[in-house]
Amino acid sequence: MNWFSGLLGHFPPSPTLPTGCVLEGGIAGGIEICITFPTEYVKTQLQLDEKANPPRYRGIVDCVKQTVQGHGVKGLYRGLSSLLYGSIPKAAVRFGMFEFLSNKMRDANGKLDSTRGLVCGLGAGVAEAVVVVCPMETIKVKFIHDQCSPNPKYRGFFHGVREIIRHQGIKGTYQGLTATVLKQGSNQAIRFFVMTSLRNWYRGDNPNRPMNPLITGVFGAIAGAASVFGNTPLDVIKTRMQGLEAHKYKSTWDCAYKIFKYEGSRAFFKGTVPRLGRVCLDVAIVFIIYDEVVKVLNKVWKTD
Image (cartoon, rainbow, N blue to C red; front, side, top):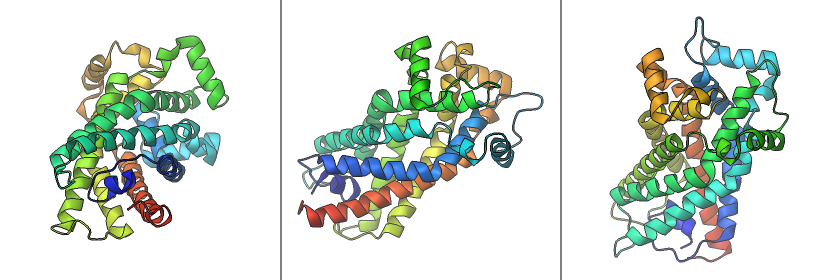
């Protein structure tokens, strides 16, 4: 089997990492991002909206309304380019690392149990956080936060990246690294644990039992929801640490302390609803597309 089959099937041994699969994964991620990015935008705005009298936004609908009134519908896609440009390398690092680790941890029958799936997912999440996600997310958050300014200074993706590096150096794209590592590590640990558990449960004693896209999508949505409820506080901290006001915080832990002290525990769950919508759709779409790509590649490339 190719590495896609290892990820999405019963995790049998996989000797290769086809470049085509990595590209298909990036395409799948790009499609998902274009569909769900407005929810990511709203989630980020709500998380950046610190406690005030009154706060800038009264909720999800008000955030969408103000954004569209001020910047048009395209305003809901500010920062999209940073995620699109990072989708292919993120897919490569995440699934490549997961496959590398899972090959080391499968049992003699080629099966990866839930606990080992969690460990492999954790490793994949940490790797993608350090290599791709942190700089990508930092740029995205800065773009979205910049739109709130009276005079936005970033004219586009490459101009924004150039300005960030010119004023803050490379470290300016690595703000909130600790929070990002914690978030991505827990994200993938939870998702791969849930997906592995559900697939093993569904297939039972028949590892070759086929799964239709609907079941894959439902399992993916459940895995996504589990990760949202499991680590949204980390996501809020990460967003604050990557915003234009990040200089107010001495460290990740200082950020968490100040949020709790000045805004209360509820602030750690800002943006939960839009994040839930995006992540459930995100994980469901990506796993469905991956599953269908596996079927096509196995027929075309005869990888079985």
